[in-house]
Image 1 (cartoon, rainbow, N blue to C red):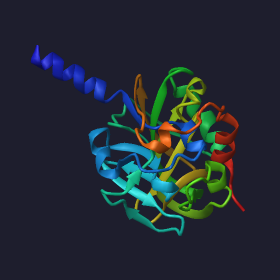
Image 2 (image 1 turned 60 degrees about the vertical axis):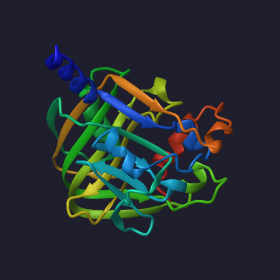
Image 3 (image 1 turned 180 degrees about the vertical axis):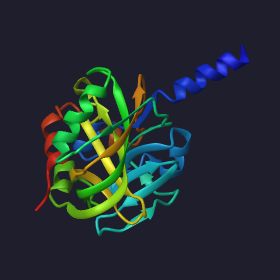
Length: 249
């Protein structure tokens, strides 16, 4: 009975997506810290998110949290750094495929789509390889009252050539758009731990992709005054699409 209970627990752990806050809250500018980087260890070793007042892009890989700053620096995020929004899981590959060539972010999605089990489950994705071209962005820390679109309209973009690394992220279903960002949402971490950011576009000859299918969702809603008093009734779909695809100046 103990062995079965432990097996059931471990299976649940590796199929559970833990999320802090919601996409609607992010769109409306709820960026204050609800938890801290040190809390992520309780919920996963793999994931993406952002930091207090959108201070850079977050990448959690192999249990280490990285912060891609707007000035191009990549650093290991301090344990006390605040996080307003995060998605994490205990990653365990259930399917591995090799894809390529890939000429754009749009084509990457088209190549990944047939390997998903359907349109209604979440999928964690770990994509490794040498990227011929890569375009990423990072947002700068914003003042209280700014929205997500305010931040992404003044983002910084970085272009890289012949760079090896890992894309960390998720595919989320459209029916969950008020909770999460629908479609593919990927952040990049270079193998040399010098570069990172939110993926905008790419080109690669071949990529190795691991899928982890997520059938359970745990949602942690902030108990901060900022979240409790925010108006979250608006449909975030259009704003999320603009924020995710905006390639800056």
